[in-house]
Image 1 (cartoon, rainbow, N blue to C red):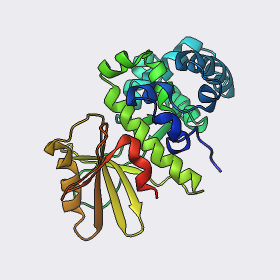
Image 2 (cartoon, one colour; image 1 turned 60 degrees about the vertical axis):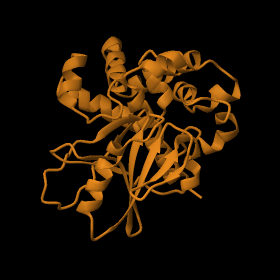
Image 3 (cartoon, rainbow, N blue to C red; image 1 turned 180 degrees about the vertical axis):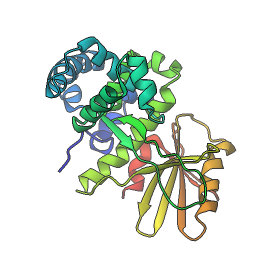
Length: 264
């Protein structure tokens, strides 16, 4: 079994007392909740011991400062397409080293790569995966976000929210002793769906937005994907940062804190 940090449903009594910004800051490592630790302190200890020392020792990475920079640069790319060349250049390392270090972070359950959904659509489909962290709190810490006020204003808040939701679905699959079966869709014209989950003969297609209001533009990618898959059954969802469930003709709207209603 692959046991990831807590899920929202596992700490739902605590989540009810926390705002979305606080959840993004805290993440889900058990010790933070068990010992009621400040996230910035607990996550700094975790980063210094597990990531900087233990993970780095696996490949015998000697350049600590470059490795630290590389991990932080990964955090700055949550929810974005992976570009190893750009990542390596910015970290001051070769493409080969960047690939080795990223594989190390994957194997150590620090980062998760979400693969693109492939099908013969007669269109140019993105082949690069999207990068996420297994724990959103660690990503927020690496970005230097320490307060709810900072989180609310941070330009990467939307990416962190997307990270939160994607990994929640991954946790549910692992808890069921299933392999990861999550994808995203994006074509050369930037038509995109944040999360695709094959469910028997149905696709669950999800748009993930951190905003508290729903606008018609959220449905653009979902409608496009549904049109491409007219021979399949597609069920559309919008997961958002608000607190009201809604049923619309084009999609079911689900608040972030009621995500467990989709798992029942």
